[in-house]
Length: 183
Image (cartoon, rainbow, N blue to C red; front, side, top):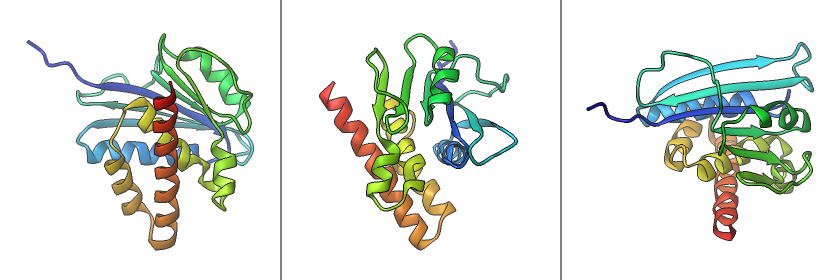
């Protein structure tokens, strides 16, 4: 009998400069630390800062043969354009997470909105919105452990940046836990 694998197909999208590519890279690095196989692809417009930016991450315990996301089971949309483009491509029952700083709140099953950018600004650095979103995504989606993400961040960043990124990740994880508890 063949053992079932865990497979997550994730799309992270937003405007250039929002850090979705870095968030996808950290997601992949954390999954590798947990022993998973990972494929990441990226796409971004000519004008990186402000243009559309997207990364797809596939995480699987089994070998990844087809290296493109077909129907994501998690979508993170950091901009209205990303929400419009990728919400419809999500698998039935997929978790769609979006930044209510830019995307109007909406009702619906498996929709989770949170003001990632506003929260990052309140923390003193709007550039941390991607790490808040990553902490939220992994907690709400049950994809990876926070420990693996913290290790990936600690390996990539030194002192001051590491501490700020870890604080942002933890803020996102806590926000997701609060949203899940209220649901």
